[in-house]
Structures are given as C-alpha cells and as structure tokens.
Length: 310
Ligand SMILES: CC(C)(COP(=O)(O)OP(=O)(O)OC[C@H]1O[C@@H](n2cnc3c(N)ncnc32)[C@H](O)[C@@H]1OP(=O)(O)O)[C@@H](O)C(=O)NCCC(=O)NCCS
Image (tube, rainbow, N blue to C red; front, side, top):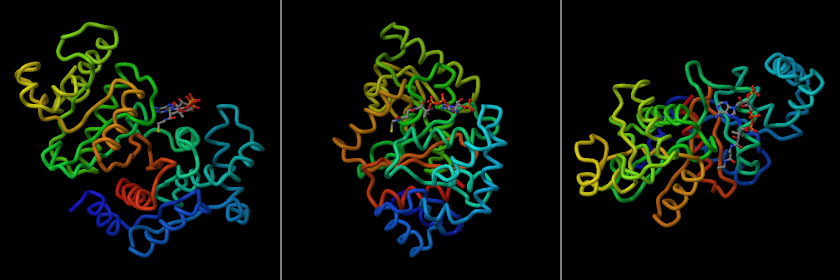
C-alpha cells in the first residue's frame, strides 16, 4: 500500500479536526469534501465571512494572541485586527485546542503561512527550530526504503548553521520513523565532498553538523559529509566512504541549505517522476504548508498526514 493510503487509514482511526484557512479556494473546498466523505478527518473551512461571524471567539482569540505576542510589541488593537485574518484565526484555533492541526498554502506563500505558525504555535518543547521534511515516494521500490525516502530541509531555513543542520537531521530521522514507518532511518549529510575529498568552509559546516548530530543522538545512523552518489550507490560508497554504515544505503537526505534542498526535491519530483509532499517538523502542534501548484489529492494527503502527526 502507498504511504498516502496508509496515512489515510491511520487518520481515520485518529479522528482529528483539521482547520483549512483557505476555505473559499476551490481545490481546498473539494479536498475537504473528500476528507469528510472518506472519514479521514473532520475539517473546518474558514473564510473572512465565517471568521467575522463569531464575535465571542474573535474576542477570546484576540486576548490570547495579545498575551502570546505582547512582549514582542503587539498591541491589543493589532491582535484584534490579526485574528480577523483566517490564517491567524486558524492558528489560534490550533493553539487554543479548538482544532488539532492546520493545512494551508494553496493560495498563501510559504512565508505567509510559516510566520504566523512560528509566532503563535512556536516550537515543541525541546526542539531548537522548525524545519521540514519532504516525503518522497518512488514507484521504484529498489531506492530508499522500499521506494520511500526523506529530504530535509526544503522549505523553511534558508541558511542553517552547523547546529541548525544537526537539529534538522535529527528531526528528519524522527519524521522518517514516526510518519513514514521507516524503522531504521539512515541519515546522509549531503555535500559536494565525500569524507574530505574537498575542502571548503561550506564542507566544514556539514562536517561540524555531523559531529553535533552525533552528540545529540549517538544512537542514530548518521554519516557525512557525503556526495549524493556516495549516499545511494553501494559501489560508489565502497570506493569513497568505505566502512560507512550509511553510505550506499541512505534513506534520509539532509541538504546543506535551502537552495540545494528545494532544487533537489524538485529535480527528483519533476525529472524522476517521484510523488512527494512536505510536512513541517518541530512545531508544538502540526501545521502544514501546500505548494500553490497543489492538486486536490495533494491537499487530501497533507490533511491525512497532519491528522496523523496530531
Ligand atoms: C521561516 C521564515 C518565514 C521566517 O521569516 P522571518 O522573516 O525570518 O521571520 P522572523 O525572523 O521575523 O521570525 C519570526 C519568528 O519566528 C522565529 N523563527 C524564524 N525561523 C524559525 C525556525 N526555523 N524555527 C523556529 N522559529 C523560527 C523567530 O525567532 C521569530 O520569533 P519571534 O518573533 O517570537 O522573535 C523565513 O525564514 C522564510 O521565509 N523562509 C523561507 C520560506 C520559503 O520561502 N520557502 C520556499 C520553499 S517552498
């Protein structure tokens, strides 16, 4: 069974309530119908009109938002204005426990969805930063873990430092395990160098990230720095990274920055014909971003994944 089908089945059992702040966007409306019809989750479609109609909730959410952001200079008046925006209203629903998760991005840009999520939902206890994993599913079962593999971070952090990169790697391994059911995540820290074949400050950052990640999670199978071919092709791994437990058999790939990650997932998707969707990791409650080019099926899958994360 494909991962999206497995997630839909798990979501049905979880019975979560997912808020969709782009409630008058046609693909979102259609996806919500499917989600409800198949019993994947309960959905709440928000529009500017529906939000404006609930005065009591608006007051309560404005108070709560003001409390969360007043130290950052947000006034009560501005909080009241912000919660009229379905995106902030939806975030407040999740924050206050009136919904279990949020899916948005068919209309809004990634930054427009991420900023309120970072400000309101914030990072989960013990997490240093929010990042993303792209769940990649190939029809070729010989690659990754039976066709499944994870790319990180392709959405959030433009230029993570070594510590940030280490935290992204640990979070991606957990997403692989918990959401994709990959029992043994094997994490490749990608670079244009393999085990010292090149020297540059960019390579040095990846090497430092490997050391930090080993300190954070000594139990994790994680290695680097590795070129992509050394990470996935056993014969290249034997040549360039002999003895590595990850090289040649990686199923989680951590890119050194957002340019590499975002370009990498799109090449895999568009030239490799690989299906994919993204989830955010490290938030205190699940909120997920869609691509503006998303299909109705993409929205349904992302709602299912969000319900499972919740
Ligand atoms: C994530 C992003 C929206 C943050 O925006 P920003 O303008 O840097 O926002 P700020 O620096 O004002 O941060 C807003 C808040 O989020 C926090 N924050 C920023 N990045 C964070 C991260 N990765 N994890 C946790 N918190 C983060 C900041 O600390 C700040 O908190 P505060 O207001 O309580 O002090 C920005 O990095 C971004 O646009 N990333 C790229 C997104 C994108 O376009 N992706 C395209 C690929 S699809």
